[in-house]
Amino acid sequence: MVAGDGARRRGGHDAGARAVTRYVLRRLAFAVPTLFGILLVVFLLVHLAPGSPVSGAPDAGRRLTGRAAEEMRRQYGLDRPLTERFGMWISRVSRLDLGESFVDHRPVAVRIREALPYSLLLNGAALALALGIAVPLGVAAGGRPEGAFDRISGAALFALYCMPSFWVALLLQALFAVRLRWLPLLGVASDAAPGGAAGVLDRLAHLALPATCLAYATLAFVARLVRSGIVEASAGPYVLAARARGVSRRRALWAHALPNALLPLVTLLGLLLPALLSGSVIVEKIFAWPGLGRLYFDSILSRDYPVILALSLLSAAATLAATLASDVAAAAADPRVRDGTVP
Amino acid sequence: MTAAALPAARRPTAPLPASGRVALAAVVALWIVAALSPLFSDRAQAIRLDERLLPPSSSHPFGTDDLGRDLLARVIAATPISLVIGLVSAAVSLGIGFAVGATAGFFGGAVDLVLSRLIEVVLCFPVLFLLLALAALLPPSPLTVVLAIGVTAWPGDARYARAEVLRIRQLDYARAAAAAGASTPRILLRHVLPNALSPLIVSAAFGVGWAILAEAALSFLGVGLPSPAVSWGGILAAAPAYIDEAWWLALFPGIALFVTVSAYNLLAEGLRAATTSQGSNP
Image (cartoon, rainbow over all chains, first blue to last red; front, side, top):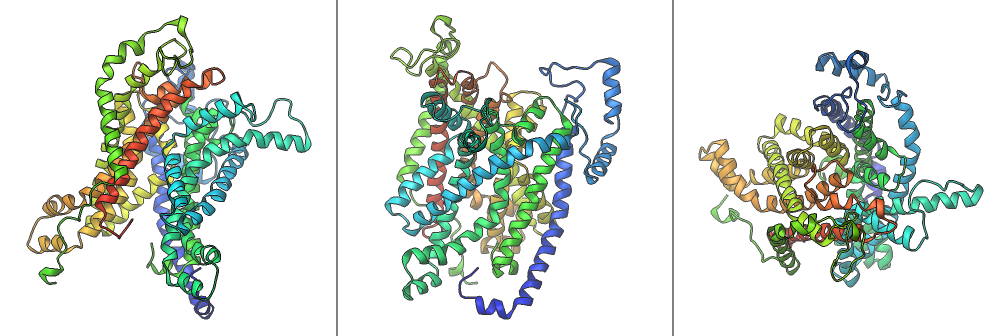
């Protein structure tokens, strides 16, 4: 993606592809112990906590006693030693068997599959919103560092970064749903959901506030990253050369500086996933959105261990895969990454 | 290596920028409010059902809550809890982070490889997933909240400390100390730590802002401090139920939270600007 190395890249295509393969293999080798660490942390997290699922949270109001508790303990293997349970769990997970929920005795996979589309919709919308605004904003601010726009947007982004999402969510509800009545207060769709285009519009209206709440922190983070990338890249000789050839300022920024400024963003894209999921817990609770964040929070309150285990494992593994993918994308785009010259 | 090539033992320090000085004043003011808050605790606890959910007025500048308690007094009374929990959690996080990061950076090799994987593992989890699991599954207490925040936040500090120690241990004075026969703990404590201190203070200041937000999120979700302790997040937890009649319940505790977090983050940015040498990283 570095401007001006086209000839070299064409000439050394095979060598480049081999280097990428080597890099991918090395990253994969590092990912194996990380994955094991994730499995271990997830397992220890719920199994070392006092208060077994049989006794339940003190306020959960579904305490089991005597024979029923004994039966449940045996059924879920809670009477076995820790290492044995870890082994059993790993072997089940590797067969993609996530067990069944303590709460409604349905397979965990089914419960996750029910919540997943809502999460994908909300997180996808938030990510699109964040990137769609953050990149142009970062380019505009970084194009004239310390200019009026840079200073104002910098202060605004800093403020966004310091705002708790549950506060913003409540204020948006109070303003747009209660006072102005422009948007629905919560939920995914109206009870009497209209069909066709009106139905889509109804769903979009329900999506607007939660997606905004989830997006703004990521937006602030990405915009600051793009801005500093643009400032750094604009100082590069290739941008100066492009300007000297008569390329317009706008084109020099967007076509020459931006691709290089995006590289650090590509390597961080994987880490946006856990940040979004974190935000989902709060946003989905406030807006009664039946996604994974809500499912996780409910499972925590009811100590539904199989669901807690599955969700934390899946989210961490997904993050690992996403970081891996973004590292590989960065390595494919920039030879300096796979050479180790740029972290 | 001539004597002239030896770097200065400490980085040059510029004065705190204006925004940082304002932030420092705000942080000091907040701690003064916290110190004076016991004066308001009676008023914060006075339940008056004939005055429930009153909008802001001259007698109740922030309005009243669902039990008729004065919201301004409640927000003031919650100040020390939010500040202290934030500070202590950030200290726990910095302690774990520095221990892990400095060890990885100083020893390198296999130690670094293992500890770096550990950092990576923790970073893979959504922060709030870990926080919730720890805060809700351990018995509710201030210690649980502090530990939960510290145990989830440390990887950031660790990465910072690792990079810093890695940089310093290759500088001439650290190598000279090693050549002169100084022991490893001595090099770490006498030479590396003092020089890594200023970036670590910056990291800690950011950490306090983050920890205050984390505590507020936990209390808002109902798994924070056990009652009767009330933090800003705990006051906000009552807001959703009355969102269609009492907007002030949501607005004012959030402003306190926002001002505090901004002050700490702005102070951190100011400290960073003052401690990084001119021109290297604006």
